[in-house]
Image 1 (tube, rainbow, N blue to C red):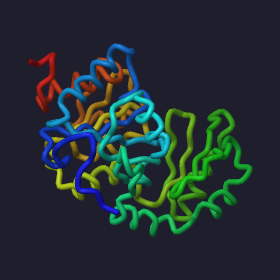
Image 2 (image 1 turned 90 degrees about the horizontal axis):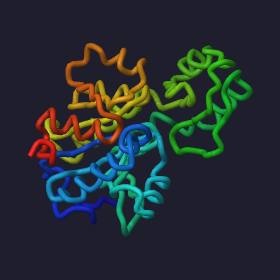
Image 3 (image 1 turned 135 degrees about the vertical axis):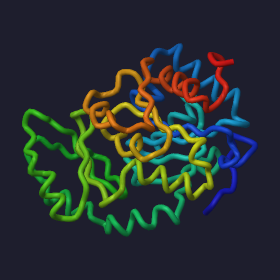
Image 4 (image 1 turned 135 degrees about the horizontal axis):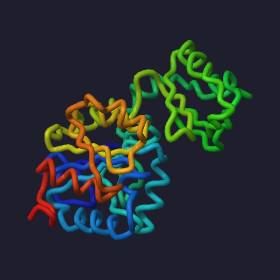
Length: 262
């Protein structure tokens, strides 16, 4: 199923003056209550010109629950599961996978879940998460006990691995992560790249922040992420934490009028 518009705006997202593609934990959900309210209220007041895409390790159903509870603005689209799900988020129809984009992810994954879980069963430092995701396998990570040979083991099987926040270990389809998936979504939707801002704060945001689109590493970002981004000239390094850092970057890069810049 393909939807041509959403219930959150009166225009296609490709017509938005500015599109925010943001990580959640530590970024869109980061900072003080007042900072989050300022950003969220600004988005809702500018829905005719601002598009919203979540790019997160969370699953789409989690996003639906949070948005339905009124805890954050409703996104028009979402890149979830560390880039392995690409969906439209509809108030009336729920999660609507974008089939042309997910077909390639499914092909690269090739129903690998059982094989990967068997290969990493009992691996030091990894505890399998109870949720079975469609196109990834995720573990809680104990860095003190972790045996790094897991990376080589998965590479030999043809899959990518990702550690984030020194707490999570993900096995992903080869070549699939937040960066490639947000770029494919932007292209699929016909969004002018110069209108997009990607926002993040941890290592699982690296591929997104380094993908060539406008990007911001919000205040409080992981030092290893900042180190990796040191020579990436498309990345703005915000001083403000979380949600406030996003607004800081929008204003500094002159991507849309904000109350600060007005």
